[in-house]
Length: 343
View (cartoon, rainbow, N blue to C red):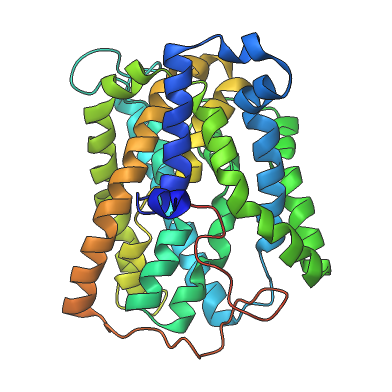
């Protein structure tokens, strides 16, 4: 049986399918973890420790020896994405109630949901699209998208807009594992390769643990809102990203459109932030469901739109498989697509 290949045919499947399985367990057998206890309970409730290890390994994969062109392209896309999410948060705080919309067509819509859906790019999807429609430098530009990993950027945006107040120690706690991994990975290329191997396999584990805290009723209730947010992510972040890619990054807009997606890893952020800020806890379940729907929708639509854009405005040339990659692993070979975990 080719279970893995079947799962990977689903956009973001390595994250979303375990999450849905966990949600099924929580919905139909909510006390299963307590009943079995021990390691089974730890696997079902261990979102934070699993993510802590994942953030550490993510940090280790970032290589500062990337070329200047790659860093310029990466920085342009990452900064633009974060700034757009911050502007959206600023606007949303003026129009949305503090606890989010509770009834009606847009049930579940909150500043938390909008920020977590918009501030992280699906790095694996971006890299795959640029391999087909971009240049070698553009394909390697996912190198800095790992900086968006975890709740830190979302926390900064929510804190800057006054939605939540985070103590300095919480910011330090959120970023410390990432920074330690980053330091070790750049001090020793062998450690970068060693820890980098753990990034991909950990995704289904924290996906399942995260799902075990979600009721399927919330996902069904937030379905339309998730679709709305997914489309909004492509439009609201896509247009600035295209412009930034053309006028700052030196591209033709293809890379910007390819970056207008929601990362699967972003699905974990609402729950993590909810544990830090009690007043956001009530929004965490619906924000998680909305972000998951946005992830799936953007993973389907962004490749289609990017292909159309590249055919009309860009260079539909495939990146040479023999060209040296500006971002290399410890062994000198190009990193595996989507190894940064942004599904």
